[in-house]
Figure 1: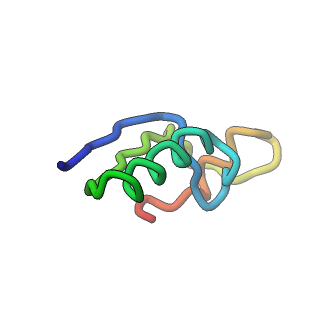
Figure 2: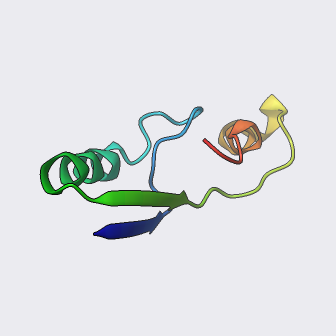
Length: 66
């Protein structure tokens, strides 16, 4: 079985605690039921890395693909 997960809550290089429960659930399914999974994790586009933008500046450093 193939699963495609589309979510705004999924860990990434800069937000490694973001949506851990979804990653954990997906990993459990992969191990238990021998499925294949792909994840599309939507992240807001934000072009500025300045500290002036506080939490939004983190989005500028999130890689496009992991």
